[in-house]
Length: 256
Image 1: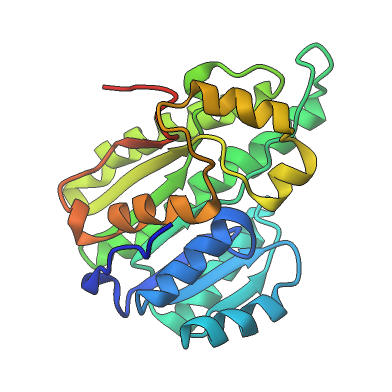
Image 2: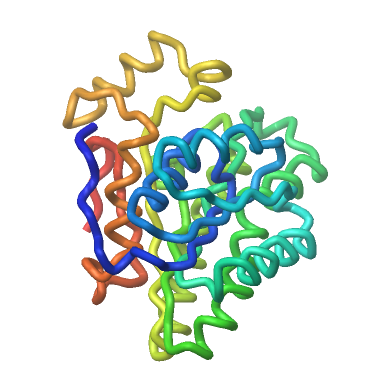
Protein backbone atom coordinates (compact mmCIF):
# COMPACT_ATOMS: atom_id res chain seq x y z
CA UNK A 1 0.00 0.00 0.00
CA UNK A 2 1.20 3.52 -0.80
CA UNK A 3 1.23 6.17 1.91
CA UNK A 4 -2.28 7.46 2.72
CA UNK A 5 -3.31 10.96 1.76
CA UNK A 6 -2.49 13.66 4.27
CA UNK A 7 -5.54 15.36 5.79
CA UNK A 8 -4.42 18.58 7.51
CA UNK A 9 -7.74 18.93 9.32
CA UNK A 10 -7.02 15.74 11.32
CA UNK A 11 -3.98 17.27 13.01
CA UNK A 12 -4.65 17.81 16.71
CA UNK A 13 -8.01 16.04 16.63
CA UNK A 14 -8.96 13.84 19.60
CA UNK A 15 -9.52 10.30 18.30
CA UNK A 16 -10.73 7.21 20.15
CA UNK A 17 -10.40 3.73 18.58
CA UNK A 18 -11.78 0.48 19.97
CA UNK A 19 -9.60 -2.55 19.31
CA UNK A 20 -6.77 -0.26 18.26
CA UNK A 21 -3.84 -2.48 19.24
CA UNK A 22 -3.92 -5.19 16.59
CA UNK A 23 -5.09 -5.99 13.08
CA UNK A 24 -6.99 -3.25 11.28
CA UNK A 25 -7.20 -1.27 14.52
CA UNK A 26 -3.42 -1.07 14.83
CA UNK A 27 -3.12 0.23 11.27
CA UNK A 28 -5.73 2.89 12.08
CA UNK A 29 -4.00 3.93 15.31
CA UNK A 30 -0.70 4.33 13.46
CA UNK A 31 -2.33 6.23 10.61
CA UNK A 32 -4.09 8.77 12.83
CA UNK A 33 -0.85 9.32 14.75
CA UNK A 34 0.93 9.97 11.46
CA UNK A 35 -1.75 12.55 10.66
CA UNK A 36 -0.84 14.37 13.87
CA UNK A 37 -3.99 13.41 15.78
CA UNK A 38 -4.18 12.77 19.51
CA UNK A 39 -5.09 9.09 19.67
CA UNK A 40 -6.39 6.89 22.46
CA UNK A 41 -7.27 3.25 21.98
CA UNK A 42 -8.60 0.35 24.02
CA UNK A 43 -8.01 -3.39 23.85
CA UNK A 44 -8.34 -6.42 26.09
CA UNK A 45 -4.66 -7.39 25.90
CA UNK A 46 -1.71 -5.41 27.22
CA UNK A 47 -0.41 -3.18 24.42
CA UNK A 48 2.16 -1.19 26.42
CA UNK A 49 4.98 -2.37 24.13
CA UNK A 50 2.90 -1.45 21.09
CA UNK A 51 2.54 2.10 22.43
CA UNK A 52 6.32 2.41 22.69
CA UNK A 53 6.77 1.09 19.16
CA UNK A 54 4.15 3.42 17.72
CA UNK A 55 5.86 6.41 19.34
CA UNK A 56 9.17 5.37 17.73
CA UNK A 57 7.53 4.96 14.33
CA UNK A 58 5.43 8.13 14.30
CA UNK A 59 6.96 10.48 16.87
CA UNK A 60 3.49 10.73 18.40
CA UNK A 61 2.59 8.68 21.50
CA UNK A 62 -0.92 7.23 21.79
CA UNK A 63 -2.81 6.59 25.00
CA UNK A 64 -3.61 2.93 25.68
CA UNK A 65 -6.37 1.97 28.09
CA UNK A 66 -6.85 -1.74 28.80
CA UNK A 67 -10.54 -2.47 28.67
CA UNK A 68 -13.10 -5.15 27.82
CA UNK A 69 -15.49 -3.19 25.59
CA UNK A 70 -18.36 -5.56 26.38
CA UNK A 71 -18.42 -4.11 29.91
CA UNK A 72 -20.08 -0.84 28.93
CA UNK A 73 -19.37 1.10 32.17
CA UNK A 74 -15.65 0.27 31.78
CA UNK A 75 -15.73 1.37 28.14
CA UNK A 76 -17.32 4.69 29.07
CA UNK A 77 -14.78 5.08 31.87
CA UNK A 78 -11.98 4.57 29.34
CA UNK A 79 -13.50 7.09 26.95
CA UNK A 80 -13.73 9.65 29.75
CA UNK A 81 -10.10 9.00 30.74
CA UNK A 82 -9.03 9.53 27.13
CA UNK A 83 -10.97 12.80 26.95
CA UNK A 84 -9.40 13.99 30.19
CA UNK A 85 -5.98 13.75 28.52
CA UNK A 86 -6.70 14.45 24.85
CA UNK A 87 -9.73 16.69 25.09
CA UNK A 88 -13.34 16.00 24.05
CA UNK A 89 -13.63 13.45 21.27
CA UNK A 90 -13.70 14.73 17.73
CA UNK A 91 -13.59 11.29 16.10
CA UNK A 92 -14.77 7.88 17.29
CA UNK A 93 -13.82 4.72 15.40
CA UNK A 94 -15.67 1.60 16.51
CA UNK A 95 -13.48 -1.24 15.26
CA UNK A 96 -13.39 -4.00 17.91
CA UNK A 97 -15.10 -7.19 16.76
CA UNK A 98 -15.03 -10.98 16.98
CA UNK A 99 -16.09 -13.03 13.98
CA UNK A 100 -16.48 -16.41 15.64
CA UNK A 101 -17.77 -19.28 13.53
CA UNK A 102 -20.89 -21.18 14.60
CA UNK A 103 -23.29 -23.77 13.25
CA UNK A 104 -26.59 -21.88 13.44
CA UNK A 105 -28.30 -25.02 14.73
CA UNK A 106 -25.96 -25.11 17.70
CA UNK A 107 -25.77 -21.44 18.79
CA UNK A 108 -26.65 -21.00 22.46
CA UNK A 109 -28.35 -17.99 24.00
CA UNK A 110 -25.14 -17.15 25.85
CA UNK A 111 -23.09 -17.27 22.62
CA UNK A 112 -25.65 -15.09 20.85
CA UNK A 113 -25.54 -12.49 23.64
CA UNK A 114 -21.73 -12.55 23.80
CA UNK A 115 -21.40 -12.02 20.05
CA UNK A 116 -23.81 -9.11 20.08
CA UNK A 117 -22.07 -7.56 23.09
CA UNK A 118 -18.75 -7.42 21.26
CA UNK A 119 -20.04 -6.81 17.74
CA UNK A 120 -22.98 -4.42 18.22
CA UNK A 121 -24.00 -3.39 21.74
CA UNK A 122 -20.81 -1.56 22.68
CA UNK A 123 -20.84 0.28 19.33
CA UNK A 124 -24.10 1.98 20.24
CA UNK A 125 -23.07 3.02 23.73
CA UNK A 126 -19.71 4.32 22.51
CA UNK A 127 -21.59 6.34 19.87
CA UNK A 128 -24.01 7.63 22.49
CA UNK A 129 -21.25 8.77 24.85
CA UNK A 130 -19.21 10.41 22.10
CA UNK A 131 -22.25 12.17 20.68
CA UNK A 132 -23.17 13.82 23.97
CA UNK A 133 -20.02 15.95 23.94
CA UNK A 134 -20.01 16.31 20.15
CA UNK A 135 -23.48 17.88 20.29
CA UNK A 136 -22.28 20.48 22.79
CA UNK A 137 -19.42 21.48 20.47
CA UNK A 138 -21.41 21.56 17.26
CA UNK A 139 -20.39 18.26 15.69
CA UNK A 140 -18.00 15.38 15.27
CA UNK A 141 -17.41 12.20 13.31
CA UNK A 142 -18.18 8.55 14.00
CA UNK A 143 -16.94 5.67 11.85
CA UNK A 144 -18.30 2.20 12.57
CA UNK A 145 -16.80 -0.99 11.18
CA UNK A 146 -19.28 -3.37 9.60
CA UNK A 147 -18.48 -6.18 7.12
CA UNK A 148 -19.60 -7.43 3.75
CA UNK A 149 -20.71 -10.68 5.41
CA UNK A 150 -24.18 -9.22 5.96
CA UNK A 151 -24.41 -8.09 2.32
CA UNK A 152 -23.46 -11.61 1.19
CA UNK A 153 -25.67 -13.35 3.77
CA UNK A 154 -22.62 -15.31 4.91
CA UNK A 155 -23.42 -18.52 6.74
CA UNK A 156 -21.38 -20.21 9.43
CA UNK A 157 -21.23 -17.00 11.47
CA UNK A 158 -24.87 -15.97 11.82
CA UNK A 159 -24.46 -14.00 15.09
CA UNK A 160 -21.65 -11.95 13.54
CA UNK A 161 -23.49 -11.51 10.24
CA UNK A 162 -26.59 -10.33 12.08
CA UNK A 163 -24.57 -7.91 14.20
CA UNK A 164 -23.05 -6.30 11.14
CA UNK A 165 -26.45 -5.79 9.57
CA UNK A 166 -27.38 -4.09 12.83
CA UNK A 167 -24.30 -1.86 12.73
CA UNK A 168 -25.25 -0.56 9.31
CA UNK A 169 -28.86 0.04 10.35
CA UNK A 170 -27.71 1.80 13.50
CA UNK A 171 -25.27 3.93 11.50
CA UNK A 172 -28.02 5.14 9.20
CA UNK A 173 -30.43 5.82 12.07
CA UNK A 174 -27.88 7.81 14.08
CA UNK A 175 -26.78 9.76 11.01
CA UNK A 176 -30.40 10.80 10.49
CA UNK A 177 -31.01 11.60 14.16
CA UNK A 178 -27.80 13.52 14.82
CA UNK A 179 -27.12 15.12 11.45
CA UNK A 180 -28.86 18.38 12.31
CA UNK A 181 -26.48 18.62 15.29
CA UNK A 182 -23.40 18.41 13.09
CA UNK A 183 -22.48 14.76 13.72
CA UNK A 184 -21.61 12.59 10.75
CA UNK A 185 -21.96 8.82 11.15
CA UNK A 186 -20.70 6.40 8.52
CA UNK A 187 -19.60 2.78 8.29
CA UNK A 188 -16.88 0.86 6.49
CA UNK A 189 -17.57 -2.70 5.35
CA UNK A 190 -14.32 -4.55 4.57
CA UNK A 191 -14.03 -7.74 2.60
CA UNK A 192 -11.42 -10.39 3.38
CA UNK A 193 -8.61 -8.55 5.15
CA UNK A 194 -5.59 -10.72 5.92
CA UNK A 195 -4.98 -9.86 9.56
CA UNK A 196 -2.72 -12.11 11.60
CA UNK A 197 -5.72 -13.51 13.46
CA UNK A 198 -7.60 -14.26 10.26
CA UNK A 199 -4.60 -16.06 8.80
CA UNK A 200 -4.03 -17.96 12.01
CA UNK A 201 -7.59 -19.07 12.69
CA UNK A 202 -9.77 -18.93 9.58
CA UNK A 203 -8.20 -18.24 6.21
CA UNK A 204 -6.76 -21.15 4.23
CA UNK A 205 -4.91 -20.86 0.95
CA UNK A 206 -7.91 -22.41 -0.76
CA UNK A 207 -10.29 -19.95 0.88
CA UNK A 208 -8.06 -17.04 -0.02
CA UNK A 209 -7.99 -18.04 -3.68
CA UNK A 210 -11.77 -18.51 -3.72
CA UNK A 211 -12.27 -15.01 -2.33
CA UNK A 212 -9.84 -13.48 -4.82
CA UNK A 213 -11.81 -15.18 -7.59
CA UNK A 214 -14.93 -13.34 -6.39
CA UNK A 215 -13.12 -9.99 -6.28
CA UNK A 216 -13.06 -7.63 -9.23
CA UNK A 217 -9.53 -6.60 -8.16
CA UNK A 218 -7.29 -9.64 -7.78
CA UNK A 219 -5.43 -8.40 -4.73
CA UNK A 220 -4.81 -9.60 -1.21
CA UNK A 221 -6.09 -6.98 1.19
CA UNK A 222 -4.04 -6.14 4.26
CA UNK A 223 -5.03 -4.07 7.33
CA UNK A 224 -3.36 -0.97 5.88
CA UNK A 225 -5.84 -1.07 2.99
CA UNK A 226 -8.56 0.07 5.41
CA UNK A 227 -6.64 3.21 6.38
CA UNK A 228 -7.57 5.33 3.36
CA UNK A 229 -11.33 4.77 3.63
CA UNK A 230 -11.38 5.56 7.36
CA UNK A 231 -9.22 8.69 7.10
CA UNK A 232 -11.44 9.89 4.27
CA UNK A 233 -14.62 9.42 6.30
CA UNK A 234 -13.03 10.97 9.40
CA UNK A 235 -11.76 14.04 7.57
CA UNK A 236 -13.30 17.11 6.01
CA UNK A 237 -12.78 15.45 2.62
CA UNK A 238 -16.12 13.72 3.29
CA UNK A 239 -17.80 16.75 4.88
CA UNK A 240 -21.18 16.14 3.20
CA UNK A 241 -21.15 12.34 3.49
CA UNK A 242 -23.15 10.70 6.27
CA UNK A 243 -25.36 7.64 6.78
CA UNK A 244 -23.31 5.68 4.26
CA UNK A 245 -21.69 2.25 4.32
CA UNK A 246 -18.47 2.37 2.31
CA UNK A 247 -17.67 -1.10 0.99
CA UNK A 248 -13.92 -1.75 0.79
CA UNK A 249 -13.71 -5.31 -0.53
CA UNK A 250 -11.85 -5.16 -3.87
CA UNK A 251 -15.17 -5.48 -5.67
CA UNK A 252 -16.98 -8.53 -4.30
CA UNK A 253 -20.33 -6.89 -3.69
CA UNK A 254 -21.75 -3.87 -5.50
CA UNK A 255 -24.12 -1.40 -3.85
CA UNK A 256 -26.02 1.65 -4.97
